[in-house]
Image 1 (cartoon, rainbow, N blue to C red):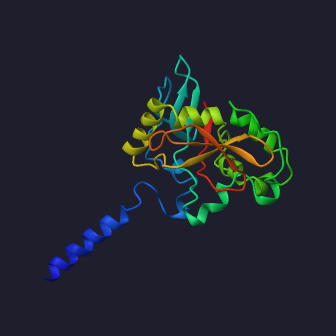
Image 2: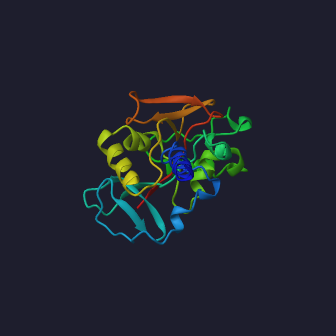
Image 3: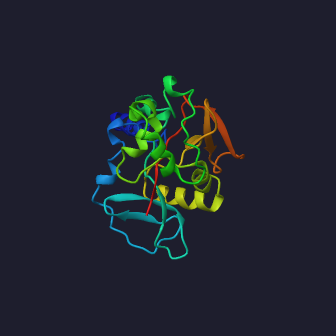
Length: 220
């Protein structure tokens, strides 16, 4: 009887522990734990979409690549999600006091250009949390522009390839939900994109002080 009790207890913990799927709940796991793990092999070009990338201390999954396979863009291996209470502050495009000003981050194709605009603003790391979350991952990381985010999330072949690699490596997969882009629309709103793996539709807008998922990208 006692043996059956322990078996049931074990099964309970296994299933409750997997209830949230691939989303890690421990705040200490973000944002740099994966970056420092030496178990991942160093990679090299040429790359294809969906390949794991690990060069010069920077890791991600390739979601865009040129014809040579030597240059492209990667998406980070983790993200900030508004449903995790501890990282809510990272999930707003701008804090309320800075969410009603047009700052000029309107590039639709290159989020690094939008980051350059934001970093010229006094106390930008406190005022624009989604940008700061991405930039603080390390040199070269930034909040993607709307077209970059659409390439990652709205192109079915790309989204599936990236998500499969994350799944295969037991890393944090693309979530079902809305992601911030770095492209602002007007004083009050910025572009958001939701995932083709779970929904249909295109990009939308959201008030800047609202919460959405934040995932960084980088060029290589």
